[in-house]
Amino acid sequence: MIEIESHTATLEQDEESKLCCCGTPKVEENHHERFEDHHHHTHAGHHMSHGQHGVGPQATSLNRTAFMATLHCLTGCTIGEVLGMVIGTALGWSTWPTIALAVVLAFLFGYGMTLWPLRRAGMTWSTAFGVAFAADTMSMTIMEIVDNAIMLVIPGAMDAGVLDPVFWGSLGVALMLAGIVAFPVNRWLIARNKGHALVHAHHGG
Image (cartoon, rainbow, N blue to C red):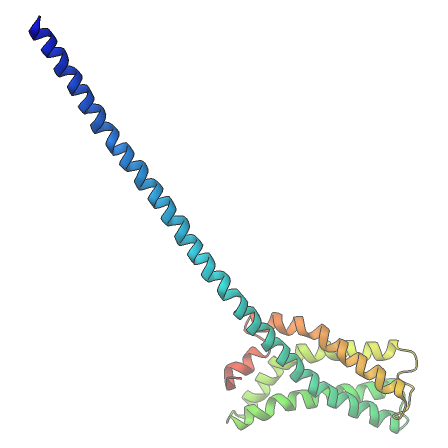
């Protein structure tokens, strides 16, 4: 009888030791899984935080570059447009010859403003012309289309004299709207290393 009770006690002790042995790894395993899950979330959040910090400056830099590119093209177009409109109006030309002269001069001054720094940097004429053409053509084309379309739509704008406030007011509004329309196009091009990104790649600036 004593032997049976002793044997039963031994079996109970063995079962308790097995339960303890089996239960401990599960506890440790669960603790390890929670630690890895916490580490994963912390690590992912850390990377996400870094990603969010990087988006702002990059977008700001892109917007600034696009704005400067738009302002650059708009300056050349404005000089050409004003000269063309003034010359055509002063000579009493009709609408279409005046617009044609303004467009030609706008492209001439626009390309010239890009060519000048490239040539000063030592670039050959052929290469500089290629870069200027690729950088400015789309932007200036959009500006000229918008600008002249608005001038045609505004009543009396094309018939107004050089000293008429209607002429200068209409031209100012047309050029401003042309720049606004061209900005997102320049931004899209620069983001894909096209447009004025080609100029920046050559003279860093």
